[in-house]
Image: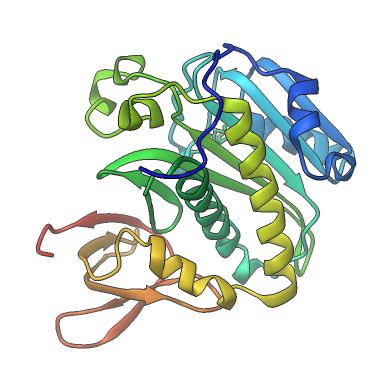
Amino acid sequence: MSGKGYRVLSVPSHFEYEDIRSRLEKPGFWKEISVLETVDSTNTYLLNRADSGVTSAIAVADAQISGRGRMGRRWHSPPGKNIYMSMLVPLRVPPAKAPVITIVAGLSVASVLWEDLGIDCRVKWPNDVYLGGKKVCGILSDMVAELDATRCVIIGIGINVNSDSRDFPGEFRERVISLKEFSGKDIMRVDLLCSIIDRLMGNLERFARDGFEVFLDEWNRYSYLKGKTVIVDTGEGEVRGEVKGIHPERGYMMVESPDGKSVEVVSGRVRETGEN
Ligand code: BTN
């Protein structure tokens, strides 16, 4: 492991508003920064704020009672140890391109973990972050849409920072990992949180200006699945083949089937076959 690391003098078990505000690069950009002890879900909280007309906001919680995962699943949110954060950002994107936002978010997390902490993780399409074959971070985006484009996006990020596998129900323990379990060190959540917010904001500005194509090198660098043989359950059937890359505008996963055909996978559950 390399990287600049963070202070590990003490690890407070709660977030504080001033602590977060003072570390952000552009605190004035955010109309609201909500630091919550417990919330149902930080994404749901910001959906309500967007309904009330707020256009830029951050919500951070020490615990979530009904943390939401992808595909209607639950996100287990043990109190005081991990990061549960959502960002509400005014971003106009046509619906077909909206899925790449979560990919940009995954790359933002992966690059901060590598550059700041020297932790070399991988992004598993579409937007999980993996460490040594186990999930360390999940991302869920909600779109506040108008007819032809999003008006705002809410990007929710959950990172297992200082949790222990025993904080999770039995069936998850083998599949999740925390940064602390990986590195053997307590990690200062607020430093990591603010680095990720700043990096993601910078990357969203870059995406709005230059499109997704400029992130392809980074995707190749951090990709967990590239070159692996996978089976994707798309909901309408299974696609099997080798992952070749990602669509340069829409973020679809490009899979080459055994007969050499290229298939674009828009969404689905991915499993590795273990062949390569
Ligand atoms: C997944 O991998 O299924 C996505 C998990 C996303 C979890 C985060 S935690 C902060 C935000 N609030 C939620 O309710 N979910 C996201």
